[in-house]
Image 1 (cartoon, rainbow, N blue to C red):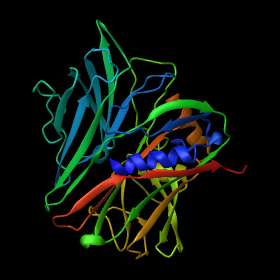
Image 2 (image 1 turned 135 degrees about the vertical axis):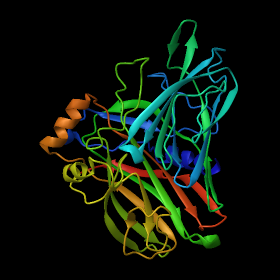
Image 3 (image 1 turned 90 degrees about the vertical axis):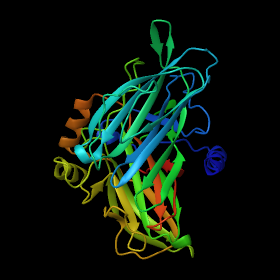
Image 4 (image 1 turned 30 degrees about the horizontal axis):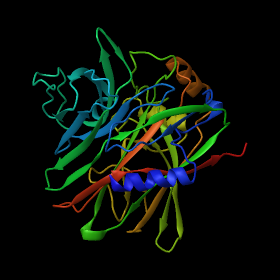
Length: 362
């Protein structure tokens, strides 16, 4: 993706790493630093861990979703790959379904989320209900003889086809675990641009928040999205118009949750924020195509930039107890996708990008 490549250059220039949201008061120990790799080619972890995961969103609300996964000979080992595919269904209290699939070198497979079959054409064992939507995480292993190792590479892309005739297409997102720093708190900014060109009138802003324990190294590695009261990303939202005028919006939470989730009220109480969702619309000018909450209600700016500034995690005993029960000392990973459409035959999708970070003042 061209925009991804340009953004990677900017990250190098400003020495910006992909940073999960951080709050030491919440009990996390040390700041895990991530970077976004070029997902047109294989995603491969560095020497520290050799971890390889990529992420998609899916949406079956009057839509079809197809994800493509490719296993190239990224490590030059010649060993086959084993993909662990985790699917988190927001519409069903973030229930997880998962399965494993086998890949040979330079192998590609397309999964239809309405009828999921494995790479060899057999049933996957996962059947998603009509109207399901949520997160897909794929971790690829290289298979060495009778064992496996998290030392592989893979890449993929995403296609969401709406019943109204438009499509969203983009690359899967990935990350590379890099290092551990002892920052007290990091202030992380994400952003995306929007406009109403070609009749754009609707939006889908998806936010992925996942957590894992990256140490010790385990061949049973997996991502988790629940409990939602402990795995969420809080943001302060602003919109900047083309005249560089900033409009302050509100605080929101991204989590694997919707209005029918039985834990929503508890999440809101713990976070201290009045709205939480997996997907949002932008504002009253470009609302959600699925009637979801807005990032910036009572705002009618039709062209500009949305800025998502990370908020600290709560310090309440309830939140601390949840984090302790999870048993992870790393920070949640946040990734996002931006879909814009005209409600008819035109749609586009890209990623939410990190563009700055700095230390919070204590």
